[in-house]
Each structure stands twice: as structure tokens, then as C-alpha cells.
Length: 452
Image (tube, rainbow, N blue to C red; front, side, top):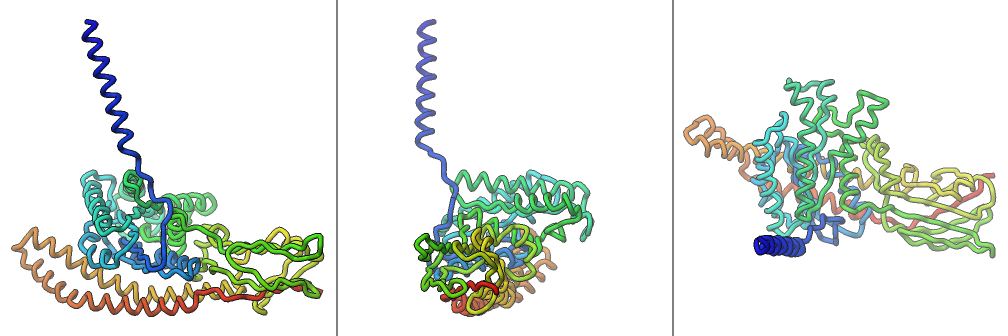
């Protein structure tokens, strides 16, 4: 009996030892904390119609153009309306791999869940195809960034029903997307990938706003976030991928010896001098504020985008008591008391500043780029998606003559697709060339003059 107990003890100890060795030999992966970018790197935004909208992608592009004006990245939108993970796989080589990305963000799932309550077979198809996408991204030497599906707004669906849905589908589909998103997060965590939570911020802002306005929505059709919702998505990407940084801080102080000194971040201050009624200096920033087109203004306010991700702080100590006009390059941008200037003012949202206007011009040029080149290119790939789906149907039913005729028609429609895509890419690049001629911050003159 003693020998038997002794044997069990040895077996248990050996098992614990092996478990410990196995645990030590398999360290946990670290999810991607921050994008490591340098000039020439490529990023692909892979997705469905929410990416095809060319809004959150456009706003992230605006951030790169203004926050890193000396670093030229290759940014490619690979969204197609109606896409599921399977569809993305069909165009992967030409629409993702061909752009030699360093990072590929993946926003899929809204269509994959098929707008019904949770159905395990449906989820397993999504899981299998998404796993294939992750594997293919890794095979081309890129890092996947998995993003949760966005929010399905059940209340918006009830207020403005575009189609007749099963009441359970309306009530439960946002929960289905939460489940899909949690799988994305778990996969990113287990494999050490990038991850962005789109679902959480959209739902939280909507919930908070409905405390005062029960009809509030960021997603009027329940599925596709409008411009403001897409700002929420863009800020989620900037936050979750470690890209957040402010523009600049300027602190100017008059010492006990009567001399003016400065402490700054985000640029270079020079020619600081005291004038008869105030001070003046030259300021050369390294970047511009993140400014978006007017239709995104509500989203900017809801996310506090300027203060959190684009701060331009100016703080002046030692001015004689009173009120001061601030001009930048001769343009009056505001009047402030010496007390307020001593606490600091924020300029990033001041539309009168030359730097705001410069950043807005960049954003509008990028809007033109997306409207005239990127979105038309995405429409070309939507035709290919119809073709790929019909081809699959013919392969499953080779004797179906109507399907075969439809396939032949679609083959004609996509003839020359690569040439048309190349033309749109060339147009997009030409417009981006213009952006990089206009996104460099020049040296500017700041003058504070006491109001008489």
C-alpha cells in the first residue's frame, strides 16, 4: 500500500513538473501596443461597406497627413459593400497583398452574422474565414489588426425601418456583433496581433447621449455609421494603436531678472522679444492639428478629438495685467486676458488660426481624393465581388443555365478591372502628391498686443 501511494506521489510530482515546464516553454503573446511606422510603410484597411464609405479611413489618413507631415505612408482602402470574410479572401492577392502592407486592419462581421440572432454554424463560417485572413496576412509578412464589428443600432432600426426584420433579429443582433468582436479580441490577444475596439465606443457614446436625447443615433440606418460615428471609429484606431500625440505646447515666462524664456514641445521657438505692448516670437511646429470636414463636426465634439488628440497649448506668464489680442501671421485669432493666458489657451479648434486653415485644406484635398479616386476604385471591386459569388454558385450548380449566363455577363463587366484600378490609384497618388506639398507647417509669427 505504501509503495502504491509512493508511486502515485511520484506520478503527480512528475505531472506537475511537466506542466510547469510546458507553461514556461510557452510564454503568452503580447498584443500589438503601438504601430511602428517609417517613411514608405504601407497600411491596408480591409473591410465591408463601412470601410467602403471612405470616412473613418479618410479621417485616419487626415491624421497621418497632418501629424506626421514628413512621413509618407502608402494608405490603401480595401473595403467593399456587402463583403463577408469569404469575399475578402477572393480579392486578397490583388487588393491586399499587392500593396505590400506592413499592417492590415480588418473590419468584417457586420454582414457575416447575417442579421439574425446568434447562430453557431454562421459564426463558425466567420471564424474559419477570418482565421484564413489572419493566416494570409501573416504569410505576406504583415501584421493583422483585428477590429470589432461596429454597432447595430436596434433603436434606429425600429425608428426608421428600412426593411422588415424579425423582432428578435433587431433586438439581438448588436449582441451577436459583441460576441464576434470578443472573438476578435481573444484571437488578437492569443496571437499577439493588433486590436481595435470599434463596438465599445460607439455603444457607450450612444448610451450616454440617450440619457438626454432618447432618439440620438450615430447610425441612422442601424448599420452604417454616419460621419460623426466614423469619427468615433477613427479616434478608436488612433487610441488603440498607440498613435495619440498632441501637436504642441508653448510656455513663455518672464523671469525675476526681466528676461523672457520658453519651454516648448512639438516645434521650435525663436526670436522671442518684448514689445512696447506685449511680446512676439516665431514658431515652427512639427505638425498640424487634426481638422476634419464640417460634416464630421458633431463627432469631433463627442470625442473631444481636439483636446485629447490634437492639443495646441499656449501659456504665457509675466504679461502686465490686462487683455491681449493674439495675432498669428498678422491674422487676429482671439482676445484673451493675462490671467487666461497664464492658465493656457488651446488653439487646435480655433478656425481663425492659419494652422487650422492649413489643416482643413489638407482634409478637403483628401476628401477630394477619396470622392474622385478611392470610392470609384472600391466600386470596381464590388463588381468583382458579384462575379466571385456568382462563380461560386455556378461551381455548386454547373447545370444552372441562368446562373451561367449571369456569370458570363459579369465576366465582361470586370474585364479590364486591373487597368481601371491602376488608373484610380494613379489619380489618388496625384492628389496625395498635392497634399504633401501643402501639409508642411511653415514658421509663423505670434504677436500678443495689449488692448488699449
